[in-house]
Amino acid sequence: MTRRAGMIYALITTALWGVWGAFAGLPAEHGFPETLIYVVWALTMIPPALYALRRIGGKLPTDSRALFLGALIGLTGAGGQMLLFHAVHTGPTYLIFPLIALSPVVTIALSLSFLHERVSRLGAVGILLALLSLPLFDYEPGQGLAGHGVAWFFYALVILVAWGVQAFFMKLANRTMNAESIFIYMTIWGLLLIPAALAMTDFTQPINYGLSGPGLAAITQILNAIGALTIVYAFRYGKAIVVSPLTNAGAPLITALLALALLGVVPQPLKIAGIVLAFLAAACLAIEPEENA
Image 1 (cartoon, one colour):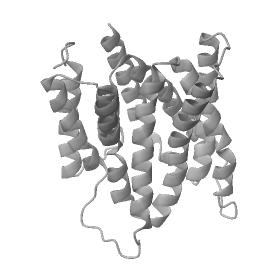
Image 2 (cartoon, rainbow, N blue to C red; image 1 turned 90 degrees about the vertical axis):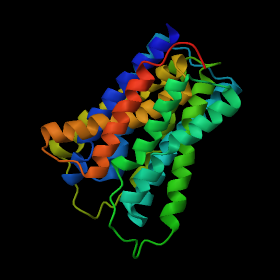
Image 3 (spheres, rainbow, N blue to C red; image 1 turned 135 degrees about the vertical axis):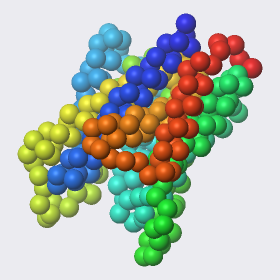
Image 4 (cartoon, rainbow, N blue to C red; image 1 turned 60 degrees about the vertical axis):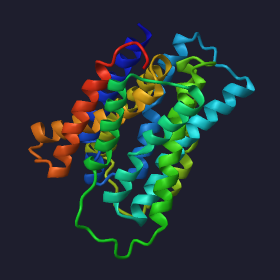
């Protein structure tokens, strides 16, 4: 039953993030800076956080372990997002995002080593297929690196490790904290980094403050925020080595399918391969037997 609950929350997260991914770039295309989109995202975390706080009766743990884990999870998540804003301005996005997409490798390595998680052979095949699919969704061959330097590669590696570590500690923290408290601390640290996002914003450039800017950002980012809550539940009830690759591969799968169905965007051959691999991975992980290999 626990594994089933973890799978349900993981699939909910996958669906929410998949829909979010299909429309997340629209506010920026309409002249609303990505740094301000971060501000909107942090603010949209508040309603789910208030729901989580109500579920635990307003009692947020404040012992040293909870504070440490909350800060670690919050900073690796929100801090990685902040560093991503800088990375995309210094390097090629078509290489940065495929590299960052491999963050589940870090989660899986840590979970196998320290949490001693195991899966069946079918689950292992699903994890492998998911990892193989991840870089294919964003990689675009045939583009040069002229003028980009090497700093972007360092930033991408830091973000990769940060998000992989965050997922691992989400699972670890769920052993001693409730999922709601973990999410509340994620929200707090996300909000604390708003001044940094504002400082990174170029207010001398025209900014769209209309409904197609912050209004559209709020609509899309609330999906991201709710998905952030459900993934904490997914890590509570499911295995990190399953939840991390499933959500990271499944969400781009849904995004690609929505782009094809609603926006008429025909995926490139590599993305089609990623779609096929992600679908097979999701199928393997969804029907993985309860028993461990």
